[in-house]
Image (cartoon, rainbow, N blue to C red; front, side, top):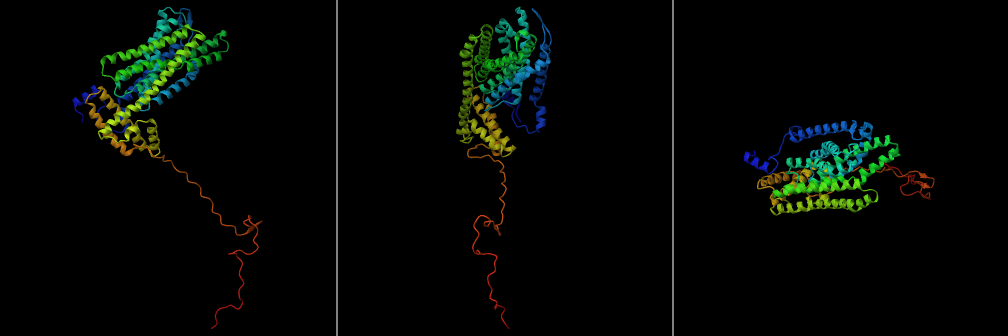
Length: 470
């Protein structure tokens, strides 16, 4: 059992508690603080969405009169239009975080926070700021250049990034790479954009159906969906990603100055990018917008994609280098660094294990996660982020890896999938033909001219033959 001083040192280093919980799974789930935190946050998300729904469906007073609220059918149609963009970003971000993926509750909190709490807070603050700035319009910050440029970027980026700081304080030990923070920031931004798009689409549907000058209402809405859901869909994830990178840098350094300045610098870049984006969307028209889009926005997006891909590859190199340290100490097999530092090899090991039974698959997946955590723990010790208390966690991970290695697959080279073989139906064994067909025996050869060997005819018998006389 871990002593009180040792437990305190673990908490200071944000290390997991020692020992392996061998209680039944239902008991572990019901007593886990993650379970009740998730339940509580889901209730908060639902409450924020309900309050936001009441806000956008009610009539709102403005300087120009009263702005009618959107109807429920417009909200449902807007949600249908916005779902495809959300699904795309979820798939992209979850595929990027493969070396040490976060638990699904972390992903759910990031996505839910951006789609509910951040959106609700931003809606209230932006609407209040628009009134204070004496902006006429329908409470939509995008219709006001001043609110969209000088208020919305600060409010929205802060609302989306709050969940990153909260999770960093709760699970700092598990947030070990820039990719993990980029994924969390991207999910928060994708959720924010999803709810925001629903509001924009719903308002466009109501406005185009009530205003004759719009022309074809459906075409106008589809054009807006293409603009926000496809051409400009990268805006929110790209900006919030900068804040995520700042938090990631702060978590992997010993310098207290960098820990403070890195998140602020990331947030400042996110706000600046968002401000430039909104200013160009509000103040430029036609060819000028296209020029800014192809000369500034797309190159920035391509640079961000290249950066994330390079970070994923860098993760593999870091895992390989840190596992080599344990190989030199004699604690791991020489093949472990190459096997567990390649995504393709890890995936093949999981596929092979899956065809050999659920227990083998669970052990293989656990072994991959254990050695990945071991590599990042070694990296944290080298950087000075974790002190000597991490050595005890190293021994725990090594013991756990030995038991997982015995039941799982640690090197899939030369192994094949153990797929069930389909039994082929045996060919029917028909006896040879005994009667001549139309063209002879069997119907495929000319009829024989004489009796073949082994025919059924009787040979001539000597009539004088008989049993010997007495």
